[in-house]
Amino acid sequence: MAHGEALTQDEAGQTAGRSSDDGRMAALMERYCGGQVAAFHELYAALAPRILGYLIGLAGDRATAEDLLQLTFMKLHQARSTYVKGANPVPWLYTIAHRTCLDEMRRRKRAWVRVSSDGNLPYEPSVDITGAADPQPSADEAAIARGLAALATLPAPLRQAVLLTKIQGHSSAQAATIAGTTAGAIKVRAHRGYQALRRKLAGNMAETTAESTTAPVVGTP
Amino acid sequence: MSERESSDLAAELQGLRVLQATAPPAPPSPALLASVQGMRPVRTRVPFRTLLVVAAAAVVFPTVAVSIYPLRRDLGALPPLWFAAVAVAWLAGFLIPLSAALLPRPGQVLPNGGRARRAAVLASLTLVLVGLLFTIDAPGVTILPATRWAGFGHLWWHCISFSFKVTIPAVIVGAIALRKLATGAAHLARLGAAIGAAGGALSGLTLHGLCPYGGAAHVGLAHGGGVVIGALIGALWLPLVAGIAGRVGKS
Image (cartoon, rainbow over all chains, first blue to last red; front, side, top):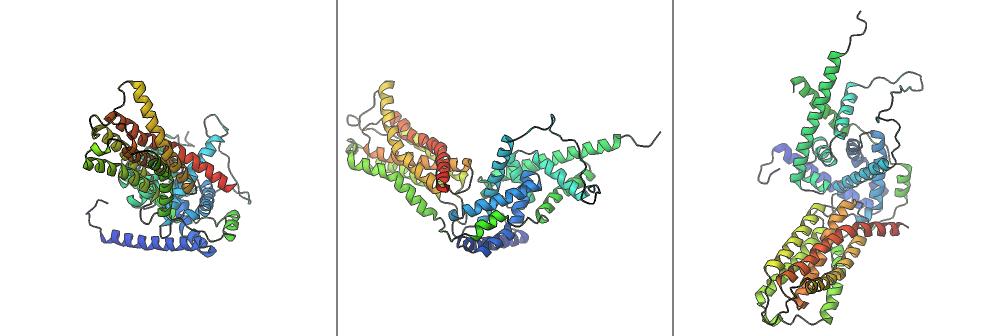
């Protein structure tokens, strides 16, 4: 938000809520550094869902994101002596999560094994223990999958900015702190990323619509 | 884009937002729980203390140099106001990047990498320009380096190697102090650039009082060049040394 621009009531309320939340997180982190195991569990309960959501957006799949979440908290635990008393640990945790994700992606690229010439695996129907085939994904799940796939096509800085501002709801200033850049740069990246995402999703939908209208009708003579 | 497509897009983005709220994570893994159960209280970091430690490491060689070498012989012939103003510029070139590299903004854990990088670039450019544009010599008293490349290069290397003795200890101590930050090499490189630039500026401040050679080219490229080279050394070395220090600490 530009300096001098008046805050609306909602925004003022959000800011106040956020600063009280920041204070709570700082207090929890201090207790955690003081050796209280319960404080770790409270911190995990409060922050793990947000960090997991961010990691799903970055990594593109939940299983990887769950692994990265555990690694992130392990790194936080190992680095807790570098915490600064009274500081908000949330942007720091996001930075650790982002770093952990990038390291993991690099490691996986190095360890990549090519299993098909075009990068796609043939479809294998999965079954559960009852022997029934997996149900078709719901409309919501399909939409999320499309969104994640489109998000994955964005360059990393744009993806990070879109995730932090448009999806996770951080302010530009908070996102800038997490990304280690300026609020202006975050705004530009988020805008470009959002536009690219819209184009990508619109393109995907146009393809889907074209396919459905040109597909042969089964059963007609 | 049609109205339907537009609403589908909004739904998909909404879906991604829903994803953030309805994804309960797994509980902490057994390995994480084991580490947490056995933890002891830790002493947290005090950034200002880190700043003092790194500054102390940088100040060691200038202190030795000032006590060993004589002051520049043209000191009495130079305008005092100019001398003081340029000294303030060098001092600011030391303090501003060092603070940017080591002191987080209030309420933050990490020093801002972007701010550190900007401080390093600004200090490097400003101090080179100060040397090139605002150097004053006392005719007949200040020694001017030879205009031939060999003579100029020899004195350039002399003053640059002086700056290494200020910059390198600061970068090494800074790397040890920042080794556990759990951020990436890029972030550490930005902080390193600022610490290196600060070391170069402190070296420039010391040379401002000690180096008997004048001339805008010498001061700009050798004393100011020490800031640029210091920033490069810091950016390259700090992540490396921090990585090594981190591994040694773990083993």
